[in-house]
Length: 172
Image (cartoon, rainbow, N blue to C red; front, side, top):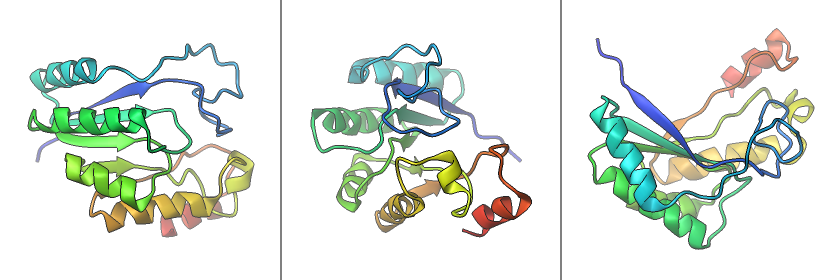
């Protein structure tokens, strides 16, 4: 009989190369969103601490990337996960596509959940996104599962899909 309080922070905003029809973070659409570089680790941990003091028990960090690259930015995300985890909070990320090795690194850093939405059914997918495949989505979810990280996945209703598309997404 409790509600979990969560906080979501965009740790890297805008300039995503994807063409997801619903997303204001795509570089392909003029949405007026200002691009922001990856935040500093200390700033993220400070924001998580503030969220915890306000009652949040889960802190989710999102980065507008198509996929995670093994570089200094991913190393910073690993440090962010470690820092938030050290506060005793559940840590969640949504970073785009990740490999099995990247998922394992996130798990070792203390990641609790990974958000990666299916968005719609496989049959309707190309109407919503053309810069990745439905299988890319499923592969990332499988990589997260293999690392024994909790999967947080859903869809977006109202993208021109049919009732059968909605059912298909739920069955997936």
